Image (cartoon, rainbow, N blue to C red):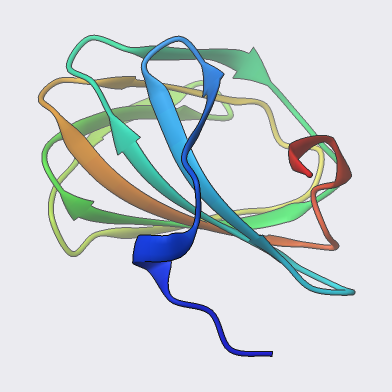
Length: 105
């Protein structure tokens, strides 16, 4: 299967988080455009997650520790670890989830 990001429709998954989502049998990739001040409430899930900050400044809390991440930073989030975030600027983020994030289909 071949896709082009420009042809994938964007979905607002939560307020201020617009994702272009790609799913395979065992993983999901989310290309996010995030509006300044948009928040992800604290949550955890069974998926392993890798987050890449492509553009902007993103405040992220993982297991109670808060840091600000910038363009080029990568965070690995183990399954079932509580995490939350807030866009300090408009951001572009890339999230990879394994296994597939079924609720994002």
